[in-house]
Length: 356
Length: 179
Image 1: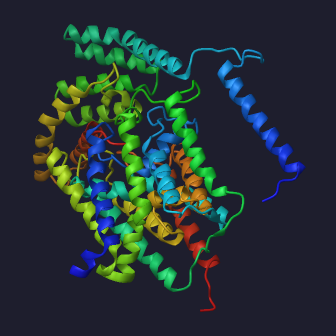
Image 2: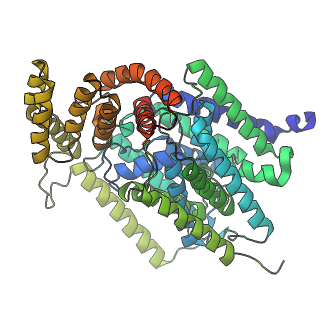
Image 3: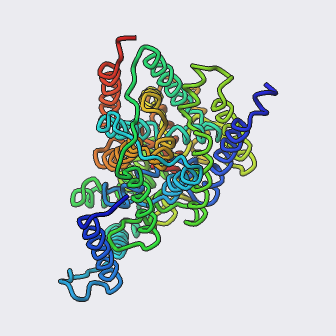
């Protein structure tokens, strides 16, 4: 244990976990919606709305945290000499994976980071989501050990890895210039946000830390099943949880209850299945929605395709009535989750190396 | 890496296109065909929201007057008349919910309140002129402990269970969050 703590990489992971927990809670205090200081899926739904990809007037805002995460990772990778254009592994499948990641998140109401922010705020209705995430991670590990592999990214000529960072730089520019075509909510959760520069600063900091440490929620879940407590990411996740609990307690935003929680519903089965889909898919494609953003910032065009899929998914889940609300999960959402689970099973069949 | 004539021409053309784009953006496109510039999306939206609020307050003013004159029965009848013209309007459900709760029909009233919020999220939004957060918070403070106790005493009563579920929905919407 002492040797583990002396590891410099582990120390950095702990710092990343603490920063994510602390700032994830504080962003809500500074203006982001309750329990949504950081939520990659919610933020992508907001951004999709701002670009006109859906018509929910209460969910339209380019969340500066997203360009922050991605561009922070780009700068960090570039300085460390790790920015490399790479990709080409099951590209369109990854696009669909991105869409289904958002389907799962929107049915649960939150990405894996928000799952832990909800839990650490005392939202007991998120427990079924945690069970789903763990079950999905376990199923994916079973798949990986049975030969399921979505493919390895290869170096790509033409500097294609810079495209997604440039797109997010453009989104950031749109937010500062605010052209007339940009849709920005004046009511609802889209209108609740921390000051722009604060959100951007937090995003950049977390982007740099996540790039240096490869911090990933579902990566921690995967490593937990593969390596147990020896895995540094597991300790990073624990640091995140601890920091978030303490910050919730200090800011007075902790309320342990099953009922009446912000941005939550009581359809436990569908919370479970939504997060099962997210956990399973994330481990198979090499990272949770947050990690996909970071990898896209490092020049990984496969992750970039997942990010594009997530952005499109952010529009679809609102336009097609897939996203859950406090009232529960609509039929469209339930069907979409089942289709998503079918998609993961199909991936597991199509991308299985049976020679081993 | 050596550059031939094709490369050089392409680079020059690229620089030219970039320069033209910047010039066009800086000049505001004065030389091109200009699209008619109407109000921005934000202006359109603000107009729409204010018009909507004004329309609702105006349409339901007779109901408010009847309520102020302490005539809840007549107010309910008036709401029915309005509902025939404007079916599925959340404001009808909101006002009916208030009347039913005041008359003691708690579970029915809560059901109407929830229907109102599902139809029009403005009622729980601090920024909306239509918001009724105080009304809902008062309802939660008084009705929630009462219904919890009654539901515990009558675990098989589906009406009480539904009303309790409705109250938890209201509580969740008042708590905020992203949806």
